[in-house]
Length: 250
Image (tube, rainbow, N blue to C red; front, side):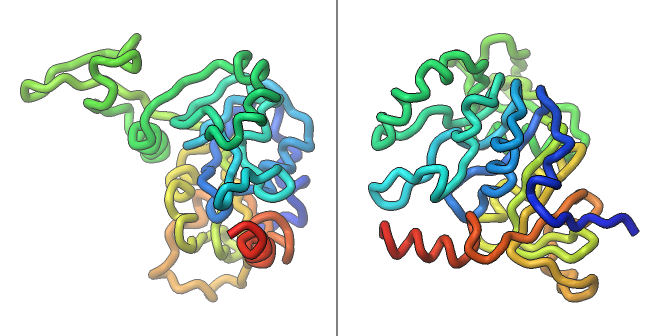
């Protein structure tokens, strides 16, 4: 059996080249693969295409988190050439950050769509579906360059599937075959992102032996997962670190 367990995040991203297409969920601390994002940033790759539901820093209460507190795709700014997202700009509370990265943001090629369309395009990519028609965006700038069709008297836009070279996944538990169990909001986009990439890399709170996971609660089968890294206690996104942040800012 192929060994999917890697000793470090650095090792898990070592073969990601310049120009790679990478998808990663980002919605606060819980479901974001923070350690893989940091390892990719530290690797120094460039000209990336990043696919993520948002491209903003995280915040707790009124506090805008730094990359040392919650690492999000936003902090890959200098490595990104193209961005596919639904939320490309920081909230007003982080306007000072926007001023700092303003020129970098202007340089990035941007493709924006609704959260639902983005999710469904990724799901289509992972399911081998050739595309779908959606009414979202009809009559707006989002319809530019897209096929339009009338179905049952209503206008729809054709949306193509999205796939990636790599996906970064955050899950709660994995067994050594890569079967994944999620907790809470981790389950939002991670399962279908795992399906839509050539290589899926998961960071998890715990790795268990085969047979220890109840098959009834496995969401992502191991066939979709290529690499697994366990999050060290106290590292970004760990239960300990998240509790410390919440007690400090909430």
